[in-house]
Amino acid sequence: MPRKTKFVVITGGVLSGLGKGIFTSSLGKLLQSRGFRVIPIKIDPYVNVDAGTMNPIEHGEVFVLDDGSEVDMDLGTYERFLGIKLRSENNITTGKIYQKVIEKEREGKYLGKTVQIIPHITNEIQNWFKRVADDYKADIVLIEIGGTVGDIENLVFLEACRQLSLKENVVFVHCTLVPVIKVVGEQKTKPSQQSVQKLREIGIQPDFLFCRSSEFLKPKIKAKLSLFCGIPEENVISGPDLESIYKVPLVLEDQEVTKKVLGKLGLSPKKKDLKEWETLVKKKESAKKTVNIAITGKYTELHDSYVSIMESLKSSCGKLGVRLNVKWIETTDIENKKVKVEDVLKGVDGIIVPGGFGPRGTEGKIECIRYARENRIPFLGLCYGFQLATIEFARNVCGLKKANSTEISPKTPHPVIDLLPDQRKIYKKGGTMRLGGHDVIIRKGTRANKIYDSSKTRERFRHRWEFVPKYKKSIECKGLVFSGHDKSGEIMQILEIPDHPFFMASQFHPEFTTSVLKPNPLFLNFVKVSTEK
Image (cartoon, rainbow, N blue to C red; front, side, top):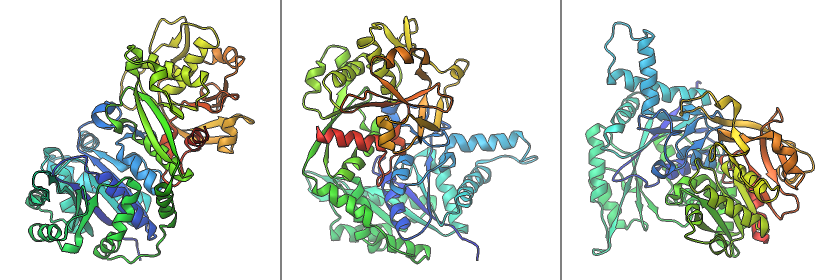
């Protein structure tokens, strides 16, 4: 009997940022734990083809997939929770859909027809869903529609899902907010009622209501939502605020969400396996010791700019049974002499210098790296952090006082970091960096070799500038070791200082290959040494 894929569509109401991505990932984990092949799709209604050119402060982190796609950060959450590798087709944008339809029109695929939103755009969207289902041989496809019901941008995607439900087995879950007005002190249902009403006007009646609130829903509130939204009371699900997002699958499990969704889809569970996940949550909750990690960046006003770093730290701490305390350091304040580096880094156990672009805040980051190196504080540099660590060492240890990156100072006399040769004639910004998964060759006998327990690893990249190999010999003779490089041996990809407790940096982003149950070895060992400090 041929496989028949089922679909779960997750929509949002009232306001954005309620945690649809966390709910989608958690539901996916639960369905996965029952033995089903679950594949997520995130729909972003913006006209951008991808997230690559967006400012992290406005949109949050740009996540990079193994195939080089720059996508919404929710795909990072999917990968971490489900422990799977996703591809470009798991992220749909308005830009991608319209680009595809316009290309077909130019090729004469619709010859003689007037190309319209319905049926051509909506058909393209549905065909995309089915193509992903077939490519992955999925039992269940989870479709998360970004934004909220009522946004003009996502109307076409909602209509496509409505049409899909006429032909396929589709379950609709609507995520809403149940706020508490302090003066009244009561959970208010009206925003959810109006949001569901808006969804009904489009032609969609949700099967489940996932209600975000500060606490579990009161019984009378559940009953009221059920009555006014036309949803069985047992399908009104509480989504209370939690200390850790890793608890969300367990809270959903306590409310028998998996059983109810599978029942709606007409599926029977093949097994149940959540033991490893439950163990991680218990270990996190019972942790006594705290590790203090400083994240030094210039996008710190929106913590979502560094969400994968945060989740890599949290999963590492969960694995080691320690609590995480993060201190956010705005490096432009150090650069502008508003604060002293020794004051802001006082009492931290480890320092991370994350990725970024442009000159703003770089001198502040370099000061943080110097402080970590000289005071023997565990340090982990990521992408730009790798480049700045090289600059700091060249300046302060090798005596190349004006060493810099040509990105920051085009006329520097010591360009230890320069534009990758294949980037010199590229002028388009979108999708043109050195992106995605590449093999990293690791030198034997190095700390990196010990950490990865291998002479090769596959990691994800997102950069235009690189370390200039002609400076390698003069830098290594002073004690810094380039312990990882590409297949050609020309692009340096890991550096370390052997006689330091932990001083390592990578040109790649190890946070993009971390999963909840299996943190990247660089993060795990960084947290381990920081904890021991």
